[in-house]
Image 1 (cartoon, rainbow, N blue to C red):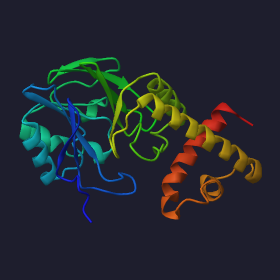
Image 2 (image 1 turned 180 degrees about the horizontal axis):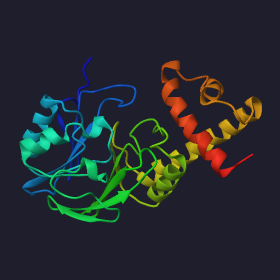
Image 3 (image 1 turned 90 degrees about the vertical axis):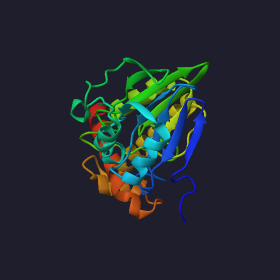
Length: 263
């Protein structure tokens, strides 16, 4: 059955609406959230994470957005950025990301940069961990706060950390940074969530539980255990179709423990 939100623009806050791409998978959940940002009454629009080069989806983005002032990318994974070049060409709009290679028409985003677009102020926050180039975008408008989190914080489940691009130590630091912020979570996948600080705190607690489970597994398996061996113990109750993704996260956790808690 088709998700009822595919192809439908859904307003989440007075300045942020989402268009869900029809690309569901184990990694993308229901699909990629393409965010449309504009202050009430503003003529222009900011598009965040256009998704794959999926012309029906991107055409709907153009129809909903109208004049696109900028296309912003939270990180380099194809399910967020692949359609940016097509959209930029059709909308005659620049593409900006933390990674210079993804940019078109303007330079890269910088941590702490303040953007004035579509009647809004957006703060760029570099949040490495899921990928080295991951960013979040903070918005405060008329007393309401929101944070676009890409894949750093999802609307459901947890984020995969896949070395070498992903790094657990950096990810924990990014979560600690976000736990000190407030606002609605506008994620790259899954539903929006009401409380950023609460969710970031829950993510941190989950990671600590997993690290403790891996420490316990290593006491049984020995310090040279492979990610797969650890997964078979720690993720024994998880559907085995998800084990390959779990191996990436376990590899990141093993690297983190071996770096911070050497035997």
